[in-house]
Image (cartoon, rainbow, N blue to C red; front, top):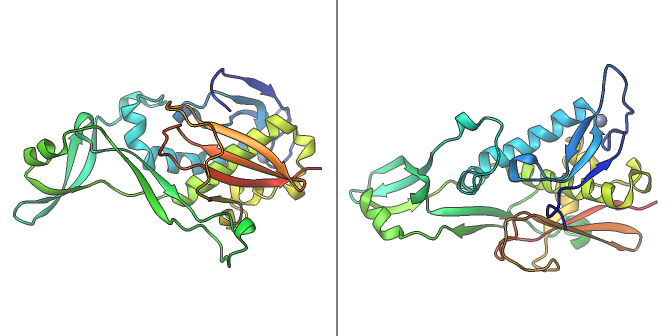
Amino acid sequence: MINHEPAKTYIGQCIYCRVLPTPEDPLEDEHIVAFAIEGKDVLEKASCRRCAQKTSAVESRAIEQDMRGIRTVLDFPTRHRRKRSITLPVEIVRSNGEVAEIEVPLDEYPQMFAFPNFPPPAYISRAEYHGGIEVTEIQRIQANRNLDSIAAKYDAREMAVYGLKYYKDWARMLAKIAYAFAVRAKGLDRISAKYAYVLNAILGVADDVGMWVGCDDQNKLPQFQSIDHMCSLYVENGELHARVKLFSFPQAPEYHVVVGKLS
Ligand SMILES: [Zn+2]
C-alpha cells in the first residue's frame, strides 16, 4: 500500500533507461504516483531528464485533462494554482432541443470521477491483441448533488460530462506506478531492463500497453473509503504482478499490471 506515510527511497540510477548521473545530467526524483494526485512516495535520484519528460507528458495528459473534476473538487496540489479552473464544462440539451456547452461551478458539477475499465491484460487472457488498449466501459462516480434542481436552473433536459480522452495514457501511467512501486519493493537489480515487460509502453517505445495492463473484475486490494492510492505486488511463476487502485473509492476499478520477470 502506498501513500499513507510519505516515504523516500534512494535509487541513484535512472529506473527507465538505467543511465547513471553525470554533472551535466543529474537525476531527478521520481514520484511513484504523480504529485498532482497527491502521490507522496518518492524514489530519490531515479529518473534522467529525458525519461522524466516522457513520463510526465503521459501523466499530465491523464491527470490534467481527464482528472480535472476530481482534482479540483478534492483540492489536490497544483504547481499553477492561479490557473486552476473554478468551473468545469458540462454539455446540456435545453428543453427546446438546443445543445450547448456551459460552464458550471464545482458545487454543481454532476460527476465526481470517471475511471476507464480495460480488458484483462492480453498477456494473461491470451486474447488476440493488435496494440494500444481498448476501453470496455467508463466507470463513473456521481457526485452527491440534487441533479434535478441543477438541470432546472440551466433549463437542461439532459446533462452530460465529457468522457475520458487519454485512456492510453491512463494505462501507461498505471504501468509506471506499478513499475516504480516494484523497483522500490524489489530493488532495480532484480528487475532487469530486458525483462521489465512494461518499460517500452511506459517510455512509448512500443504500443503494447494492453498486453500488460488491464482489469479483471477481481478485487484483491483491501476495500475502504479514502482518497489514498493503493498498490500491492505478488509473484507468480517468477513473474511480478501488481494490483493498482487510484483513489480507494469502493467503486473504483482495480487494475492488474504484469510488471515483468524477476531475476
Ligand atoms: Zn532515463
